[in-house]
Image (tube, rainbow, N blue to C red):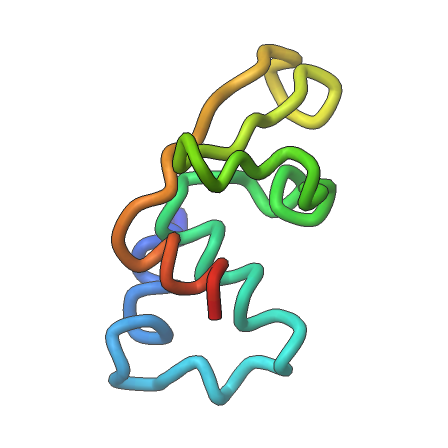
Length: 85
């Protein structure tokens, strides 16, 4: 039986388990991955210079993505809240 990420992250992020079960450094990364759809490798290689606050987006470089295709992730809702906290 394959374990879906939704089954892993939802209890953590909806409060039934809570982010407190994760170390501090992993809480932001897990939240960012969940709300953006980014892979953990993309999250860990992200640099602040890739965030465009005025446009409300972050740019993933081709060399940082699994498909080697650049992508844009828009900063909205909970994702924006986590990045600005």
